[in-house]
Amino acid sequence: MFMNSWMINAQELTFPNDSINRVCYTMQIDINKAYVSGVLILVKDGNIIKSSMINEFGLSMMDFIYNLQKDKVELKYVTKALNKWYIKRLLKKDLKEIMHIMQTGGTEYDNSKRKLKYYFNLLVQ
Amino acid sequence: MDWRIFNHHRMLYNCKIKNMFMKKILISLILLIPFAINAQNAQSEIIAKINATVSKISTMKCDFVQTKHLKMLNNKMTSNGVMLYKQSDKLRWEYKSPYSYTFVLNGSKVYLTKGDRKDVIDIKQNKIFKEIAQIMMNSVTGRCLTDTGVFNVQIKETSTHWIATLYPQKKTMKQMFTKIIINFKKQNALINSVEMHEKNGDFTIIELQNVELNKSINDNAFVN
Image (cartoon, chains in turn orange, brown):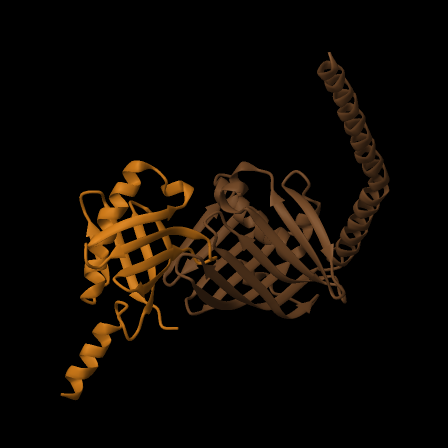
């Protein structure tokens, strides 16, 4: 019973909920031989998850909102390098999958069709 | 006929008022010129004092606290680390918590270390990294104040600090920042903090603490 409650608590920590409304991840996106890395911060606000990805220097890469009820991602801001319609469309789809994976405690997502791999690890603060 | 004479007098009266108003504006501007020149001179003197201090720095070591303020999330993220600088082109920026990440600038090379992953970037071939390296190097030393082609600089003075606001002039830098604010302690003309404002409303404050100057730093600290 003790182990079960520990496992449930560990699972809760992977995604913001009403008791812990902020969760942080280190995140890395592998794009062929190159990569982009930073920190992903998720904050729960009612039925939405607000999220920002920043690089290690604190520079903003993207802001997005994930609606838990509608299961929908809305990009609010992307840095210039990502600000192309085809990249934003891809990001929205991939971020939605990542939100699902994070809720189940997963740590990576592979978009093999586009040769993109996302790695995310809980950041203990 | 009376109304035409009346309109004519009214026109003349309005012209006279406009002329008087314009004269007052011109006189005010002429009187303000010495103040503008004095403000410019005062700014140049402050920059000269800062440059005089910077020129005497051969090495710098300090702790830093970086706080990122996220507008959309109404939240902030804090990280800590250590900075090493060695004149004139060596900088080590090492994040220790809550993540481990090291950025080393040595001449034209940038060495990045993240966990087991190590990368080397030649800034001559990478415009973005060149800009980041220049901002970091020039911000921690205060040299950015004299980068007139890169920034438009305005300096304010308080009883204890000089506050320099830098507005980027180049396209690449403008895409990253709307302004950078550097805080210098008057007591020693050294940088106290750097504040970087971004287009999406986020801003990052980096505070330098426990600053040690001109102590010996091994060159090994600036390799991968």
